[in-house]
Image 1 (tube, rainbow over the protein chains, first blue to last red):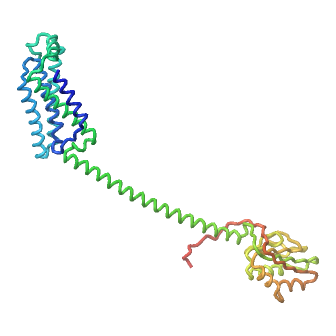
Image 2 (image 1 turned 90 degrees about the vertical axis):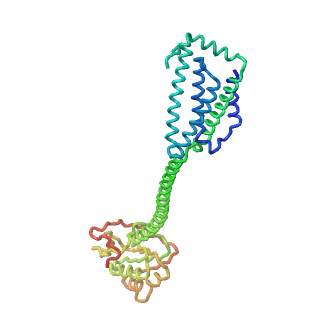
Length: 110
Length: 253
């Protein structure tokens, strides 16, 4: 329940405040969001498999975000930032899909 | 991703979800909730910043360089198009100004030529020379003399008893009295309507030994000159296109 409330609160805050993303963060925010989504889906799956651990979730969430941002940063430094961003999005997208498939199996047995 | 053996039935999962929704939040839930809220906030922020600026602010620098090169290439192309169109515009404007000037000049020349060749009626100050000849003693000679005299005096348009007199007009004696003017039989009294300076024309006709004197000296003939501020030469003459003569280049001798 408190999770849902927090999501609603975050969306509302984003809509109401409409903050401008700092210029230095602009290449990293979308990748970070995708990485966090991946961690979230992984957490839900783990919870459904009854192996959820809040410490693991927090660490994987933050770690995912940091690693994704680090890769993008490195890519920018190497001059392949755009390609690496695309690659990260593809990999994370695949993971999100597989996690979503596992969640679906747990919830619907299908 | 095979189904976990720890999960026997799907009903279990739903029941756990319902239970979790109404359970008291512990430390773990608070941490997860904080992260989820942060994620939602970041997602909305990113979506919003992307929508607001057409994605340009979040594009990376090499993409921006590509976009910039594209745009400057397009701007160059459009600029050259603008230049070409402006050239065309100025050419067309100059052309239309020149065309209307040329058209006005051509109209004026056409009117002048039409008066000279007798294809239009003319009106202006001039004189009327009436030659009475009840006895038929006036010949074509005297009429040609009169016409030549009037031309010398600056006559611009003439008609002799309803026949337009132009450069190629011939006046010949007709058998049985009268004259043929360009083939048209004309009988006395002859009426010569002339447009030009009335005083000059009248004095040219009236000089001693001139046209009026000569005609008056013929038996039974008489000549009367009437000046008028406005006479009308209404007789017309069909224009014949030259069969052989063609316009020559103006700079050739």
